[in-house]
Length: 91
Image (cartoon, rainbow, N blue to C red; front, side):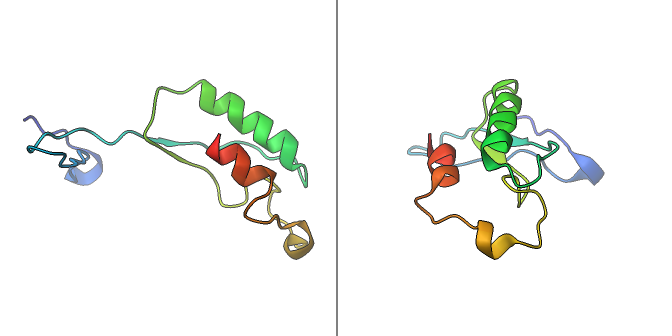
């Protein structure tokens, strides 16, 4: 199986064993987007559009505060684990 070489020679190929030694590549998408300050719904819409424009992926990595932007008001703006952002991520 050919190996692809990534940055500084590290092996980019991530093999996952399944059943009888069958392997597959892990496709990772990194999404970076401007955020709308304290506007989770608008940020989810922006990111949904950015994600839709990418190739199929197994894992999508988003910025840590992608719904609210970096805020000093994080405690009052936090959502529960059954809130709209987690539901959006599961959809």
